[in-house]
Amino acid sequence: MICIGDSLTEGPDMPAGQTWPELVGNALDVDVVNCGIGGDTTAGMLARFHPAVTVPKPTFVLIMGGTNDLWWGLEINVILANLFSMVVQARHHGIAPVLALPLPVNIDLAGSSDFSPPLGGYDCFNDRLQELIRRIPRHATESEAALVDLYRPFVSQDGKINSSLYKPDGLHPNKKGHQTIAADVAQAFYQNFLFRT
Image (cartoon, rainbow, N blue to C red; front, side):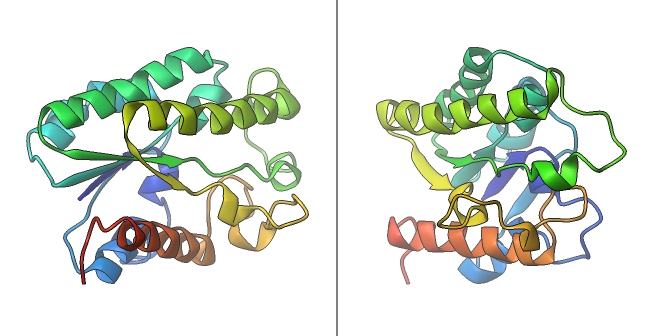
């Protein structure tokens, strides 16, 4: 399996062996290649999809992106077009595509960090992220693409972001966050009989 995405997939500054793609590989006892690149957009992912994914031709590709696109104010329709272009390319090459909903952003933590805020501010960013989260599943159903919800595990039942799963920047999952993602991805694969034990 190949996981393609941005820093949420790459896991920058995580100890060796502790990123969620590596943990998924251990849990499923399969080879998993981490093709996450920090700061990448869905356009960047689409541009490198052929050499990174279709050439090695894994059985599955897990695709998660869109956060950086929203950060730069790109249109949601463009994000969806890029994501589902990757779905179509994967299926064309005999690779099973799996889409993952991106994580929420902990605005309270992110707002106190020293990096530049998203274009339009955090409230606008969050509203657009919510829209993307709503729209991806509908298009996944229409495209008959498997879907893993990685947004829900980071939100408590009362709708609050679980800050214990984030690094201090409020954007990236910490060790516990990566473990949470890995557990949900592995469970989704087992429940959907993508792997049989």
